Length: 338
Ligand code: NAP
Ligand code: G4F
Image 1 (cartoon, rainbow, N blue to C red):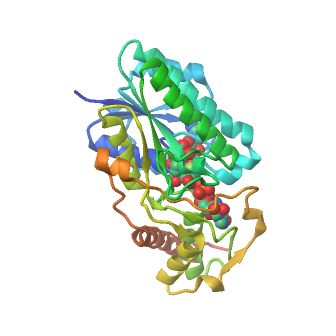
Image 2 (cartoon, rainbow, N blue to C red):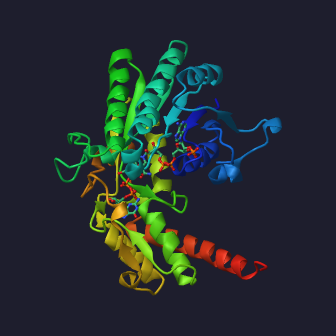
Image 3 (cartoon, protein in one colour):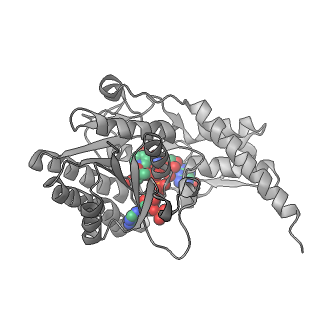
């Protein structure tokens, strides 16, 4: 039997990798896409299929804040699995847009759970909620696992804590298969360019090609547990294939500073980061999460999941990819007629 999945946030980093994975596994994949005046489907253009040719990937306009339309869609397509990845996902931006962040993350998750509850009366649907290590905030223990209390430090993290608890609440109250993946930072060559790792690899490539002089960053001492997004979408899928709904930490079990990442990326391009990186306080946050370090042993034991790409490999993949982009940009620039 072909399985049917709905992905919110399919145009994002994780959504695009998850769509690829589910298509490889033979799923019929549905994706929720926000309408905008320009296309937002760059990350999934390579897997897009014409609607007239019985595609395995179908896109639907919708927004997580529009609960009515979301319920209509879920009742129409009757997914076996829903992956709720949609969010205003930038922590710094959440301080500027706290209410919108709560609407997309908190109300958005509730809208997904309500839609699933309606469908669940007819057939079982499994729900994955994209929870975050940001919820640990000013951490109460090192490393953090599924029993570590949350202590959020941003509007983003507060909204994610709300969504986490609603997911558990729907599991307990209605017996639904609703699970949280508490994912530590995961990056890739598809990472949004304002997140720190991609900001660094994009800038280093451009600096190497003589197209940029400086890179302005905020707090270089923050420590994160960084993995590769492709590994993490496999973990999301495993969470929904487990015999029972539950909550799982996905992490590498290793933490490094932003400075370490910058140092490594510039080194890989035979440069010294200290010659190019400058601090701009505009990138500091009203409250910072100083240290995240995950303990993924439950996921290893119960799901057989491990993060297979290490910090050095991740930096290499992103650096090489972004150097190629910079080379193309430099080449294109040379031929611009004046
Ligand atoms: P991302 O690249 O920023 O993608 C976010 C996705 O959400 C995009 O497809 C975006 O659509 C969509 N979206 C935003 N607002 C929406 C709305 N109101 N209605 C419907 N869709 C909306 O994020 P990501 O890195 O892939 O992360 C995926 C999820 O995991 C997010 O919930 C994030 O908070 C969470 N998470 C991420 C990490 C990480 O390290 N990457 C770690 C833990 C948890 P547009 O393309 O139109 O903007
Ligand atoms: O790359 P970041 O913006 O990611 P952050 O805040 O850790 O959040 C990401 O991971 C979370 C999981 O823990 C997700 F839930 C969330 O959706 C998102 O994907 O910042 C990482 C660190 C921070 O400590 C920040 O202060 O890098 C520091 N930083 C230093 N300079 C910077 C910069 N961050 C950004 N974005 N830009 C800078 O110039």
